[in-house]
Image 1: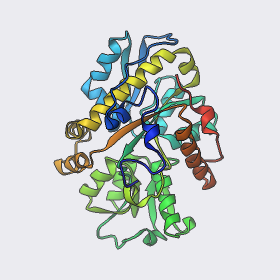
Image 2: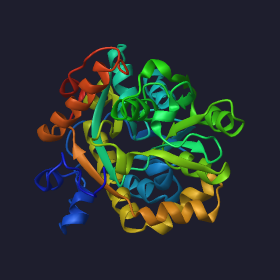
Image 3: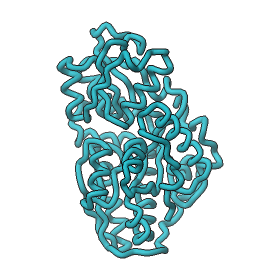
Length: 334
């Protein structure tokens, strides 16, 4: 996606729903107040977090906790998680109530496998910065050069689908490329030590590796991917959403306010992320310079769900997901 507005997401949809705080920031609308109607059977919420992104910033700033405390809700942070799959496992296993705004693709894979998970809200940030990187001295100069090579990806996640899309766009047979399934903590040293030839990865790990290992992009999501396949999502159990709809609503709205702050304060936000990620100022400045915007979509936004369904079908048709799934059946607005 090369523009702040995705070609498949129109302006009308950016101002729909009470949770679209960041769309409101872009269009000049005021942020709607948090809604607290519905059911609530607990006063404590356990939120998953990772080494970057929205939950990390929220956890470090403490404003989300304060806003929920004003509503009688205590926040407990669970993590850090290296990627979305273990975050989802924590939700299913009962040690967390929400995942950490991770990729929709592993969430769909878990749902297809029988996990009673539901999407409660979605986030599209732009510009997108997932990339396939190689070392500058690798002799690999394009996606076509990946034939016969090993590429590290995270299974059923951003890394895998971006590689599949890149190979397809450049006419490279997937069977000629070895997919090496590694989570980020293992993929980074594997790439650095030359045990894989390329790495398909998201921010900030791809940016750190680019700086640390002298790497370059051969495929960049923000400019080379022609359509959006994957989204950030806030996931919980269906039963939890039913029994605690007021709490879920409060969490969604608190995250929307946090996302607006991140959009409006990219340098401050990236400085917080830098402290956790322990990377250099060059990486921080690069990420801050992207000036990414967060935009949220309600779980019953029919136009958004139509785009999400197309993405899910694309993933299933390419065997990244094991079968097709009707996303609207697993998307619950509170």
